[in-house]
Length: 263
Image (tube, rainbow, N blue to C red; front, side, top):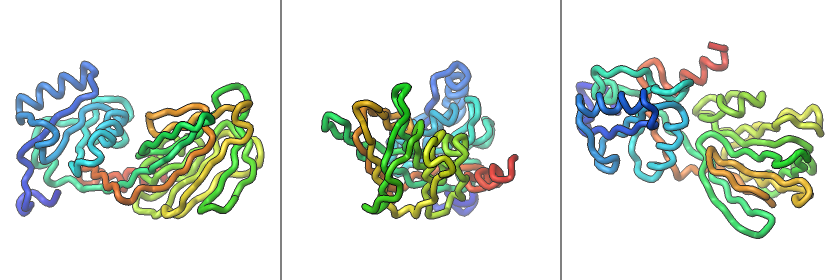
């Protein structure tokens, strides 16, 4: 947003959203009383009060608005959020460092021929629906790279999402500005030693479900789930630019770097 004193567009109008928990809603009421409140469409900045789940929902909801999102943690983990403080909020927002992230866009087709599309800021994950393990075929830019992956699932992560489900599945942490996507298996059985791949963020990935009627698989884009998948195409949507704001010294880039060193 620029430094406070020389910013050509000072932050005047704020919109406050909460996750709806008692703690978050109480914070929203106090901040509205202190700073006023406008509709998100009229705001210079949207302030999200909650945890990472609220931040993802807010980013999805206002993806096409171009509005910067400044989160303050009134949830649990809050990796994407700033520390909650009520004082000097306009100055904090004006001096915050912007991080631009691009979401994934997936196009899925189920076994009945129904089509679905959704964005994912963190990851697109494929998961087995029953006790039967999934069998998947992976193609990159139209070329078969893995004829059969026997697994509980697989996911493709953005750099911003690489410290979420991807990290829990032993995937790599990606620097925020890395032009990469992480392709990570979830409890792979065959090939047993396959640990995934790093793909350029211009790659187009297709994942096909083998033996789909016997081994049903669902696909999840952040929080949107579609079941009985036949195949899914996944690519990074470079036309969508999402802006997160973080306090100086606590940028998303810095947090991801810290995560690589375990603190």
